[in-house]
Structure formats: C-alpha cells, structure tokens
Length: 224
Image (cartoon, rainbow, N blue to C red; front, top):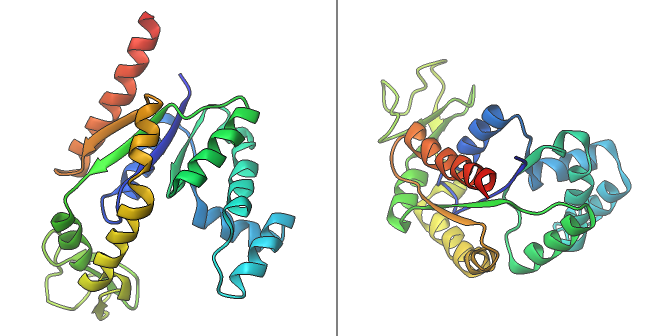
C-alpha cells in the first residue's frame, strides 16, 4: 500500500520525531515546507526565486507559491511509493490547494495523523527545552536534564532557552494553531482519513499507535 501521510498537531507534540521513524519504517520521504523552501531558494529554481523575493522583504511566502513548491517536490521519484508531510497543510485553503494538486498527480492523502496532547503538556515540553550554544545538543529540564544545571554534558557549553520556547511565546503559537490548523480536523474527518493518536507516553509507544492505525487500515483494504 502507498502511504501518503499528513502529520498534524501543535508545536512540541513530536511530529518531527515520529516522522523520522515513519520514514525509516516505510522508506518514504519526509517533506517539510521549510526545508523545501530553503532548498528551492538555494538552487535558484524559478519558484525558489519567487519565494526569495517575499522572504527578502520579511513577508510570508504566499500559499500558491508554497503549494507549487510542494507540488514540484511530490513529482519526484522518491514520492512514488508515498510521502510524509510535516507542517503542511496548515490551513483549510492550503488543504484545498493540496487536494487539487494531488488530484492532478493522481494521488490522494491516505492517512492524517493528529497528535492529541493537552495545552498544559505542550507548554511543559517546550518551555523545558534547552540547547547548547556550542554544539547544539538538546536537553529538557524534566525529561532529559544535563548532569549539571545549565551546562552541556557533551562539550561543557552553556545551555540556553530559545526565544520561541518561553511560555508566553508558546501560548501565542498554540493560539495560531487553534485558529488556523484545528479546522483541518473536520476537513480530513469528512474525507475519512483522520486518525487521532494520543501524544502521551514514550516515543516507542506513540510510534506503535501510529503504525497500528496505518497497518490496520492496510489489512482492511486487503480484505475488501
């Protein structure tokens, strides 16, 4: 079965971590809009140049440009057997555009995985993150604390909190998610591809929940 997966959820729920595991298990690429935008700009593609004209002004890249760049990426051979979209679509308008784009490519979204985590848990996870200024090693004050407070175990560098990980900024990010991205739940529920997964527990436990949903549907499709 081809797995065309969309990962949805607020910041800090582990979409990136689980995306990497899904890539390793099913041999399909992870497509992050941020990554492919930067790559398009780097290689100087026509769409990359168009995106850069907005980025240089500090403006958001318009949906139509982002969608076209995603569309170009999905045409590549490594997406023939499936793909994982992380961070896209974020809005109903993007979801509509993606649906039209995939229809032209004779593809469809097969699974949307939404990670169910409370606002309090997201704040706890993000506000506790710390990074090393020297080597970039990551820690968490609760889940993965360093041996010595504020000091990297690996290189002895100073640990710091990213500006967008403080509680006030996290709350703002969650509000944006609620207003823009939450409506996607109903959008994909109507299409029968939405799967809500508890984002609590170990990385392995969460991964097992996701693969159970994916492979259970695969088994059902064989029976039909």
